Amino acid sequence: MIRKNLDLETFLQKPFPLMCIAGATACGKSGLAFEIAKKYNGVIINADSQQIYQGLPLLTAQPSLSEQREISHKLYQYVPNKEPKRDVKQWIQDAMKEIHECHDAGYLPILVGGSGFYFQALEQGLSPFPPIEPIDESELLKKYPNYSLYEILDYVDSISAKKIMKQDKQRILRALRVYFSTKIPLSCWQKRPKTRPLSYCSWYKIYIFCEKFLLQKRIRERFDQACRNGLLQEVFEFSLSPDSPLSRAIGIKILKSWERGEFSWKETQEKFLTETWQYAKRQKTWFHHRFIPDKKIILE
Image 1 (cartoon, rainbow, N blue to C red):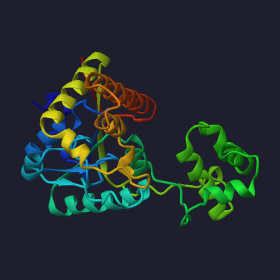
Image 2: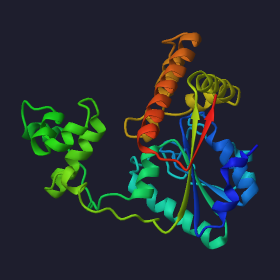
Image 3: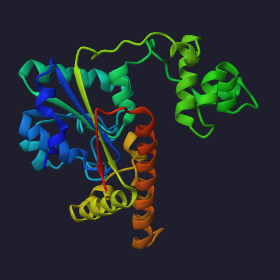
Image 4: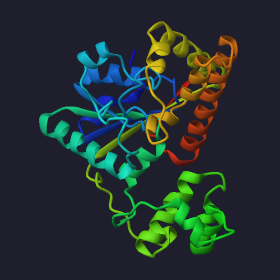
């Protein structure tokens, strides 16, 4: 049941309404979005970095096919998993297109997801980066012998290095790509004015906060339901590849290890639930520090 204190009628009278529903995995974002979309003529737009890819709809907890038939869902499973990982800039372009189409047709766009940076980038904009070229990691290490990737970054862009953990290879490589493509440090690009593409919209941001033990219970229940719906078969038919984005999906490697007989089913369940909970904690921390909602829903 939709909470009466969301005050949606007032919000919907504003020009170009845009709703965002954010929160950790398994907190009930998709259910609330479905309920609101059904009542207020809405279209649900995915803002989750894993759910954009094809191949693992159960593992990535995407809305069911029956839900997608009843209510229009956009940007779910629209990118082949064989493609390189898409960056947030590409998603913003796709999301803006869907939001514009909703407003033109009189629908309420409802962004839903757990990827906090997607919401932040769409609302606040991104630094104006030029095209960035790929980087050959081995060639870079040859050019700077006796240096690690992090040490190279610290040498060319010490400000960015201070903000990145030494173990975060993905962010380190991104910062290095920016520097060696543009000859300008990432930290300098980030100081330039950002363009807010949807500043004309009337934003209404909802954050669902779920207490620890309830969220752990919901994670377990969702996992059990996914298993009943065919999760294990879905994972068995999925081929891991270092280049495919979903090969890094939460829980995929654990379930593949069980398939190879490396763990008992009980061990696999516990490892899967622990990894998912750790991911949820990271999401909660991000939203606590960087997401300012218009309405916070607390589930206890």
